[in-house]
Image 1 (tube, helix red, strand yellow):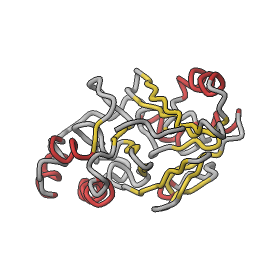
Image 2 (cartoon, helix red, strand yellow):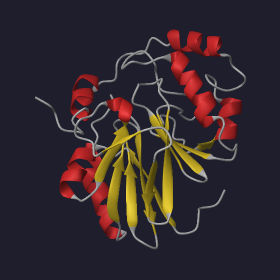
Image 3 (tube, one colour):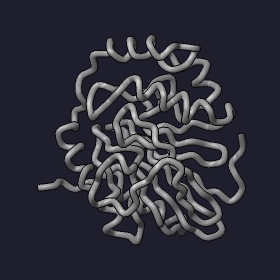
Image 4 (cartoon, one colour):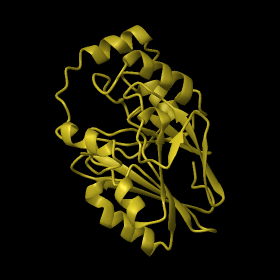
Length: 236
């Protein structure tokens, strides 16, 4: 699937937390959106925005991250960009609390929010015409864990099957993380090959898979979650 005409698209990577940050811009108006920025790479990201002659108008987080601190609050402080996250996040410092179906517009493009609780209650995916930014809800051949931050395997299964797997099969999938060097997938590929959520697995099978993972907590969880509830700055 080709690049939509007039869309500036950059996929950026933060290696410590294996996080993807996405920069989307409109060639005509130079308005731009940044999805899931990481505090450690804020200088890189803002430099790129400047080099491309873009003006950030929104900074979007797909959920309250537990593995890194968001740069949303600091970018908001330095620029005129507004911050947006799911209304389920209950973050006091956000400018926009996004509900299901809410639309973010930048230049000639728009992003539609789809609430996808399961990894956390605050998970939200961002759908464009030919692609979806899935956060931790749907990873390439995987998904976010469901054993903390109000996680629910049942909710995650329902979110993926009703909000993501109903998208056109050729829709490009851009996740918030990848740990194997993969950069994107498609809805069709995940429906077929995702070992947890695809291949015709039932909800019961998925719940069993998730209950048996027994993963260690993210290294930064005790630092990241409180900070991200304050848009990336620690709350007293």
